[in-house]
Length: 361
Image 1 (cartoon, helix red, strand yellow):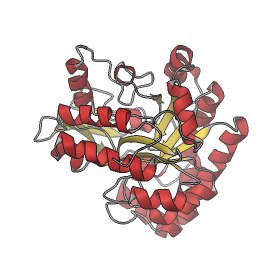
Image 2: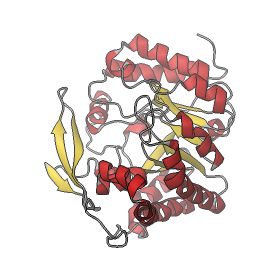
Image 3: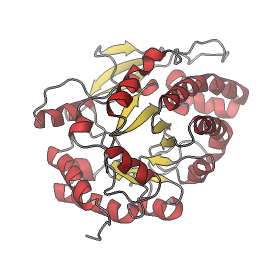
């Protein structure tokens, strides 16, 4: 099988030759692995429209073309910068030598009229030049995914502030509905364009989970977000019935997984194992969902040994892999403190122990 065939077989709940793999990185971790491979490159894959060399060098089974709010994270080297949405970002350094950006300015904090702001234009063809290149250069061999994370809930509070958006959902419902109706326009344009171009998977996402509970109630999710996702999913599948839809939410979101299944979700990411049990999810929902992720990034990848990583990967393969429906990956970006040997242990184990039929080893 080639990479694309392997991915689509797994997502269609059949067993390919091996479980598809994918890893995503912070820029520092990505550059470190590239240097280990003898590649001196600043062209990193992280949140870029056309990606970099690492996914191909490491034999990933799909490539991601990113558009939208998530591309603002590392978009400017200036200590503070403003992105195209008007959101203010600032760089910070952590104790292990990594850098990250945080939002320091919410441009719509004082918005009164939901019609009184402008959205970036996602109808222009130039935004999708990277997607076009990936499809043209690699679309026969690899699965191609359109990455449009930070889609609606996260964008709402990036622009307005989390506390204000939480208050709006309870105290200012008419405003919130009108506000979300404005914001959903960008993903309608972007997702529709990418599906039309021929991506295999369209990936949207908003973090609704904390470590052990939801960030908002299931009732608020169903009132404000589920209907809008449902309309998007239906529209995209009407354009291409074969397109698969992936959704990202960190944390514990058990309560709303049936809602996502109801509106046509195909793939759940990242299946954070310290928040939700991947084996339980497979047993309950494996006939409906493919699970993308499942490998612990909070403890095992950064602080375990290479043997610990191998054992973690084997456990996920045994408990989630049978019958297809698994795209194995760490459950978020590889951070700078993750030892190189642990990264390589993930890949080695996923490629060897992930061959079907999966054995109980």
